[in-house]
Every structure is written in structure tokens, then in C-alpha cells.
Image 1 (cartoon, rainbow, N blue to C red):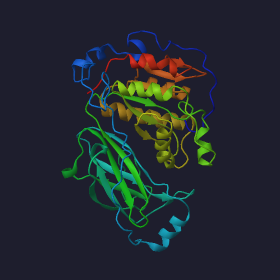
Image 2 (tube, helix red, strand yellow):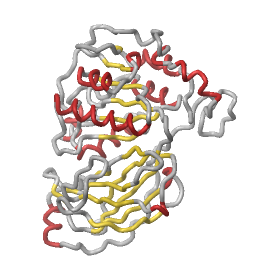
Image 3 (tube, rainbow, N blue to C red):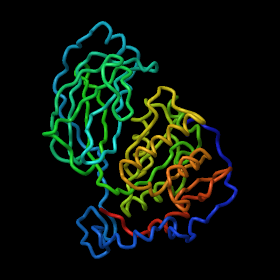
Image 4 (cartoon, helix red, strand yellow):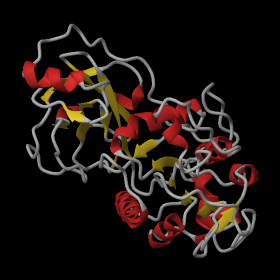
Length: 369
């Protein structure tokens, strides 16, 4: 949760992380036992140099080369735009999406500058696509950043001005996989990215909070914002999440941070060697606290559950609001994991050290598609 209260040491697990119940060890679902014979990668699969034997192929990191942006172009609205640009560094950010194969596909990004998040309106932005985050870049077209209310709400994104809403043409439609959309502001060549994950029905997901759950404290990202250094990650968290990723689970980093921290959150995941995933923040400039944060997460979890057509496999958090949201989302109790929670786990598992989860996660059956 963004800027919430720092939690104390947990009062002990409702179930120990290594326990076995109806869902199996640390959420080992009996239905997973046949995963290797249903398209999964088993231990006999040859190593192709990128996927270790006995592991699932991993989604790409989507941090490769960028397209040639070309030359700068003149501003369309030079007077108002130069005022916005002079207010500070770019705060552009894409909106990551998880979509079904038949869902409408949109390139969505917000363009703003400075601490006041001053919108860039009426300016041209090139939209580029890299399928599966590898290979050649495709130029999809050039969009214009919006004025307030120019566009109807899409996937929960309200047009508050400074947005690009670009419908990906049917001829360029994305297949199942993770894809990278790259935006270039023509007037100053500043950029941002968006990830779009197209998933088949029944895709397997882990959802994890960030602040306090992965970062060293609820307040840790504030130190980076004010220039005092990047927050640390809890020991063992990267390895535990990597173990889940190796078994075929995708990861959504779900945080109540303000929207302008989306790009920074992606950067921090790379800095701390956490497995690549999609990031969802709130869409507000100030983030969310308490009940507002809980409501935001409930809505996000409901949307993801509807998209994949099954319950989310794991939910990881550190607050009672996380426990409540994961309960409401229908996540199995043994897979609702609460880090050092000093409060009501609501039937979930309280754990004190991510390193205790690594071996049980590594022993889970594969759920590769």
C-alpha cells in the first residue's frame, strides 16, 4: 500500500508456508499435477539456452533497444507546450494492460512534465510496437495528446488530458504473449513504454503489493523520490517470485502508488532483480490510502479474475486490506500470503521471511501453457 503504516513482525502463520491442505503445499493445486502433460515443459525438455530444464519459458524483460525516433518536430502549440515542458522533467507513463485475445487492444499513455504533472496537450506522439518484446519495431502511427475528456474511458482509464488513446488496428493485432509499445513525443523526443500482455483463457497469475511487501518499508520509495537512494528489497523476495515465475506464473505488481510512479516502479523492479511483470498503480496523482486503496485493489483483482476466467493463484501483501482484497477475490487461503502481518490474516498465511518460500515454490508443479 502506498504510504501506509509500517507493519510490525507478524504474530505467526494461520498456516505455515510449508503446510499441506486441500490446495497442496504452498498452494500446490491438485489440478496442477497434470500440468506437465497439458502443454507444460517437463524435466526432459531440452535446454534451448534460455529456459532451464524443468522450468517454463519466461516472459521477456521488454527492456531491449528502442526504435530510431527520427528528428525532432516543431511543437503544435508552442506557447502552452513550452510552459509545460519548462515545469520540469518528463513524467510520461504507459498503462500496462492484461487482455484476452479477442479484447479491443489500445495503446494508452499519459504525457506530463514536472512535479505539478503538467499535461502535454495537443502534441504529436509516434506509436511504435515491438511484438513479444523482440525483433523489428513497427510504426503504428502518430497520435495527438488529448485535452480533458476528448476520449471515452477505456479499461478504467479516464481521459484527464495529456493522454494518447490509440486503438491498435486489426491488421496489427497482437497475439498471445507480452508486447511492448513505445511512445515518442515528436517535439522533444522524450519517451515512455507500455506493456500489453495478451493471455489465453486460464492464464496463471501472482499478484503482489509493492510498498512494505517488497520494499524495505511502506515509506521506502519516498527516499528515491527525494533523491536519497533507491529502497532495498526484502531478502529472498526476488528469488521467491522468480521461483513462481519459473513454474509458469505471470506476475502483476499491484500498488496503490500514484500513477506518475509507474515508470519508476518498473525501474525499481529491474534494480532489485525482481522478475519482469506488469505494473498497475492507481490512476490518480496522489495514490490511495486506507479504504480507497482497498477499493482500488478489489476492482483490479476483479477485473483480472474476469479476464483470465479463473481465480488468481497467489496474492502477496502485508496489510489487512491486502488480506481482505485477496479473500474477496476468491484466492485459496493457502495462497494468500501476508508478509509480517500484525493483524487479521482472514484465513491466509502469515510469513516472516521470503527465503522460507523459495524451496516450496521451486517444488510446485509446472503450469506452463
